[in-house]
Length: 297
Ligand code: FPP
Ligand code: MG
Image (cartoon, rainbow, N blue to C red):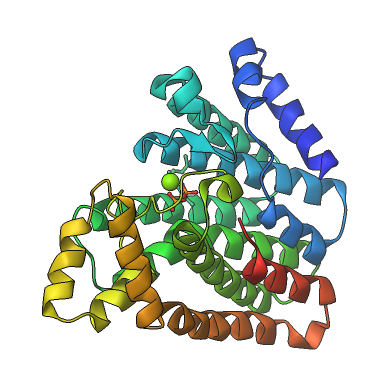
C-alpha cells in the first residue's frame, strides 16, 4: 500500500501548489479495497501500483464530493475536508484529484482508461440516483439495487476487471466477482449505519435515514409493517430522531428479522462472487469477500 501512497503523493506534488498537499495530507488512508483487489489479481508491478493510485485518487475525489453533497462533517474518524476547509475547497480538491488521475491514466493504456473512465461516469450517475431517491421515501428495491450498483459496485468491478487484464486472466470472471463483491460491500455499509456506532464507523451512525436514504433494511421493514406502523416509519423519514424513535425502528427490524433477510441476500451476492473465481483457487480473493462481510466499519 505504501507504493500506492507514494504514487498518489508524487502525482499531486507535480501540481506544485501547496494547498493541494496540505488538504490531501488530511485525507485519511481508508481501506483501499479496490487496490487490494487489483493487486491480488494482477500481482505487484509498477503499472499495477500506478493504476491503484489512480483508482484511489478517483475514489477519494468521489468521497470529497459526496461529503459536500451529504453535508458530512466526519469522514474516517476525522473532520471532512468540507468541514475543515469549506465546500469550495473540497469540491476543487475533488476536481483536481480526479482530473489528475485521468491525465495519468491517459498516459498508460487506452483499454484500461476506457474501463475506468466509463466506471466514473456510472459512479456519478449512481450518486445522482442516490440524491434523487433520497428526496422521497423510496420503497422500490430494484431502484435501490440499481443505485448501489452504479454508486459503489461499478468501480470495484472495474478494479477487478483491470487487474484481470493486467494479468491476462478472463476479464468477465473477475468483473463478475467485483460486481457482486461491490453490491455486498454497499449493503454491508448500509447495514453498519444502522447496527454500529459513530466511534466504530468514523462517521455518524443512523445517518442514512435522516439524510432521506431508505436503504435495504428500511425497504424490507416497510414491506413488513402494518398500516399504522408504515405511517409512523414514513413520519420518521428525513428527520432528526430521538433515542426512543431510533429504538422503535431498531426493535421493529429485530421483530421482523430484517437483518436475517438481508443476510440471505448477502449470501447470494457473496456466493456469486466466490463462484465466479472458484476455478482460479485464489484464496486471497476469497478472504477479501469474507472479511468484507465480517467487517465492523
Ligand atoms: C459514498 O456513498 C459515495 C460514493 C461511493 C460515490 C460518490 C460519487 C460521486 C460524488 C460522483 C462524482 C465522482 C467523482 C470522481 C468526483 P454514501 O454517501 O452512501 O457513503 P458514506 O456514508 O461513506 O458517505
Ligand atoms: Mg455520504
